[in-house]
Image (cartoon, rainbow, N blue to C red; front, side):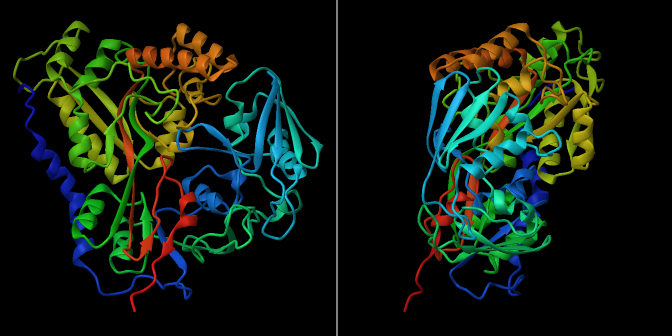
Length: 527
């Protein structure tokens, strides 16, 4: 077989060409208005990729629902830029003993219908997580919660079953909902957030109005009109033709590149958390050998993926914990692009090259991926990289629901998915993903990774009482996991906002969420 040759990067540009065609169409077409603009010029028009599946924030298991909830509701606690927990609807969170947290509720906050926020609403919101018949994707975060009770109108006690240092992070979701209006959240949500719900035209548009009585100051705009445009090219055209004011993260890199290069738009970036990776079935007889997993890691040219496919809108990843996190450990094994080392490892693992420079592979593996075009192109590049070291990779593409069901069932050799930012904000995600007792449905250890030392360290971290202790323990876990390589990290996304030049105060945080829309304003037109 042919020896690996590093300068094959023009091939990557050819693969990216399919996305570049769409990008060219965005710039070439223009003239017709693709969607009606709101009549109020103070309303900010946002083109979005996906619609909300629900308007009840307690049911938010999708990005669309989460985005709307960010604008309509507030949480008891939230995350700062350093990914540390900070108070929002709480003014303080005390921890008088390892099993007790006391939340002091902010006074003077009202729901959109004018009713005051009190401890009753907080107890109602989190008490639902303890009800056996209540269904919510957030319930798993409250396995350690024994009870939630009101001490008085503005003080709430959370009682735990056992010490759990990550508990304050769990109070960032779900947002607090009104006890008096919970039955109407699915159709007309009422929150305490910076925007009020106006209407939702299903799969078409969500209309929100500014909450002028917002406790943290009224928005700088008149509202948000979120237009749902599933097609990448059409979404870019909405911006190109001026029928959308901005797009947050919902454009493929080639279209972002073309729009940015046109010089007609404001562009804001930030290092993001979203994490692309390859996962292994650790029970597979071939992939259970660490040398094979390491060979795959060294075979993949992650820098080329970031540079050419992602157009620089990413950074090569270290692991599940992002660099912005206080718990991030930089001193871990990372995989440089080293095909020669990959082939030596395959030799050691018992997979020698059967025919030198001939076409026969050393071994064959399968990788399950989604039908998303960006990930299909990325997987094709990975397939080429592995072929150069003698691994014949069979790509199997599925609709997301089918792919995810197979991953949960352990029906794969390798799979490629993306962790989104919210899941990665607290290092307890390491326990949910890598503890041996967290295989589905209990947790996210989908590849059945097992390391007794990792289990021990994760248990200690869950019971640790100080951040310093947790940092040391989680740092050692990151080192061990990187060495064992149940995941091959690919990249962390760069968040990007593309907006019309008429907008100011554009910002995107590490989470890439919609909360900063509150401060976006339209510049006054020139006289």
